[in-house]
Length: 221
Length: 209
Image (cartoon, rainbow over all chains, first blue to last red; front, side, top):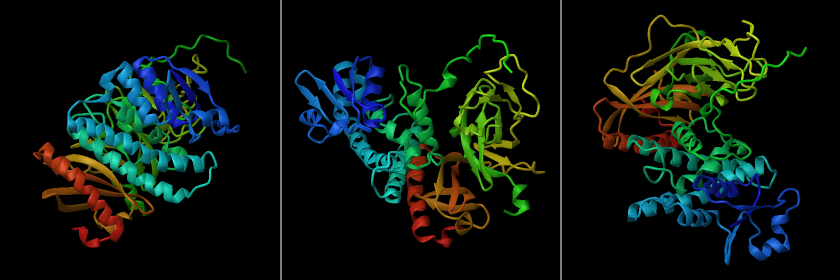
């Protein structure tokens, strides 16, 4: 499986993260998005006319939507990440996959404007982001009352992976996560998963490892 | 802010939102504190600024009985005293390297902090259980003059513990009867979203009791 990847793309990170969590080896092709704008070059447009990153290729299959890539990886390697089979559970996963597009548009838009200097109406995207985050916080608070830590099942699913990166990077777009205690604990639960990997702006939990013992070195003055 | 307010207990978070070995940024009318719970369960509130390079300690992490700064790993104990500097493992950190610490009390699922130790403990809230905390983009004084709101949400009696945490920013801790069922708590959790929208859209003072 080949992933056309960009280290700062939260959508590409979703795919790398799930692949790491379920043990799928991806062949990464780094795309020079900035400053080269290689994703909009003709060779990549031939794969993805929209000119967006990531692109996942497996044989004849070409996927250009990260939610579809998550479904494909889970179904190939770890079906438990798809969530339950009944109508409610399946619909709930789809609801959050679709909701993650709102996060891309609003939180991702704010981040692109604030951090990557793309044009955009920053205050409007930040207001829309707040509505999204409040909806997510309310949903996670309800799950906690039911004794559950994840969005769509009693275990992590692709719904969590689809929503996690743009939420975790909200401060890049000038949107604080301080008002959301349930989101904080949910992000912690995801970062505690065995096999979790980082991206710039989303670091691992240092507290999961014992304190490193520094080698005794002479003090320098 | 008035000096007498600084002597009051401020409700900053719910116990359930701060499990063992975690830290969170506690917003108060006088700024943000790094509120953390050690692995053994001890609560500490420190100034949210590492004495080394000024990084927010609430970005850090808790390992055992110490809070470590995310920047260079300097770790701090319950008094705020620096315990360890990883780049100088043989060095006992001088007493001057210390983050200010503040009074913390936890009662019936609510965590309160105070900048000056008050004479009386925080309110007990006996008979209530917390549902969740929300932040409202509105001045606390426009919601209630006395820090509490009693109302009904989704047909359930609700007590809101309210504190202003900034300009047009208020934290509200939603409490219900200690015997309320999970169904009732979920109904209240959802209904408080509507309460917040009403507050923010209309600023209705009559919502306060």
